[in-house]
Image 1 (spheres, one colour):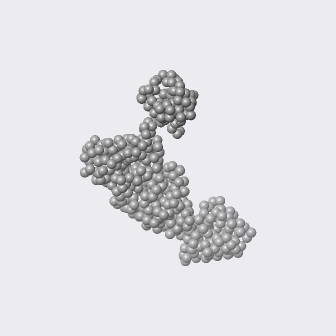
Image 2: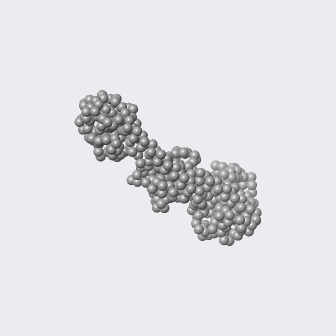
Image 3: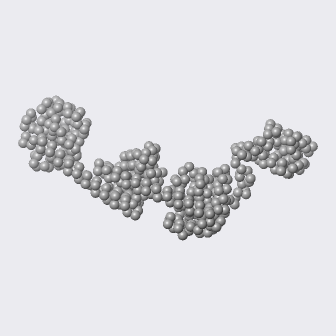
Length: 486
C-alpha cells in the first residue's frame, strides 16, 4: 500500500503534527521535496509532500501559496518551525484548512532529510511489493494459460486476481469467455466502446467509466484477434494495469495458437472433403478433427459469396447446434453437410448465397455438391435460399447469367430495334402459339393486319417464323427484355 500523510503523522519518531486538512490525511505520497522558493509549483508534478521553512513566506502570501500547491496536486505541506518562523503562520493554517490541504508542523529537532528518507523507504517498499505482486500474478496467469482450456482459465484467473469481471471478445466483438458467467450481460452496454477500439485497427487500449464501474479495454494483437475487457467498482492501480497487460500478452499468444490450430483444422477438413468427393472412406479418422458426419441421407449446402470465409466458418462454429454437421472450404465456397434438423442453422446465414441439394448419401456426395452449387448460382441472382428441387420453378432464364442473356436478346432482336408495334405483335402472337385469331383479338386488330406485321418481322429478321427453333429463340429474347432490371 502507498505511504499516506496519515502514516507519516503516525510515525512518533518524526514528531509531526497535523495543523490543517485532517480530513485529507489519507492522500498517498509519491515523493518528498524541499524548496524555499516563493512559488515552487512549476517544479512539482503532483503527489509530493513539500517541505519548507517559509524562509521567503510573508503572511499576505500564504493564501496564494496554498492555492498554487492545491492546483498542482501536492499531497501535503510540511512546515518546519524554529528557524524563520517560531510557529506555523496562522494565515497559512487558515488557508490550508479552507483548501483541505494537509499541513504538518515539523518540529525543530526533526531534519527534513529524516522525512525524505522515511518517504523514500516507503516508496521503495511499495514498489518492491508491487513488483512482487505483479510477478506472482504473472506466474499464476502463465500457469493458468498452460492448462488444457488455457484461454478460459486465464480469464477466470485474471478476474480472481483483480477482484473484477472480465470479458474476452473475438475480433468481431462477440463474446468468447466471461468471468463470472453473468458478466456477459454487460456486453450490449460495452458495444459502442468496443467499436471505437476496433476502429483504431491495431494495438489500442481505452479506459472509461460504465455506470459505477471502471473499465479497461485492450485490443489483442496487431491486427486485433480479440479484445480483453476488465471492470470493477474501483479504479485500477498501476500494479493492476501491469497485471492486465501481462494477461493481454498471454491471451494474444493463446489466440494466435488457437487461430493457427483452427487454420490447420480447416485445411484438413477441406482435404478430407476432397477425398470424400473422390469416394475415399475417411470416417474413421474424422474423429481426430473433432468432426462428425451427419446420418445418411443428409443434404449438401453451399454458401457462396462470403467476403471472409474464415470469419464465416468461425461464426458458424460458434453457433453450431448439437446435431452433427461437417463444414469445410471447397474452392471459393463453404460446404456444409447437414441433416434436416440443422438445415436452418446454415440457411439462415446473412450476406451469402445459399444453395441446398436434395437428400443424398455419402456415395452420392459429388452429385449432391453439384446440385447445391447449381442452386447457389441461382441464389446469387434471386437473393433467396434456393433448393435444387425448386430450380425447375425458377425457369430457364434464372439459370443464364444476366449479362449473357441481355447480350443474346439484343443481338437476336437488333433488326427490330425501335419497332415497338412489331415487337408487341410478335410477342403476343408467340404467346398464343402462332394462332392468328386469338392473338389478333388480344391486340385489337384484324387477323390480316397481324399477318402483315409478322411477315414484316420475318423480312427484317431474315428468318422464317415457321421454324420452332426460331420461335423459341425469339420468345426467350423477348422474356429477357421483359425481366425487371433489364
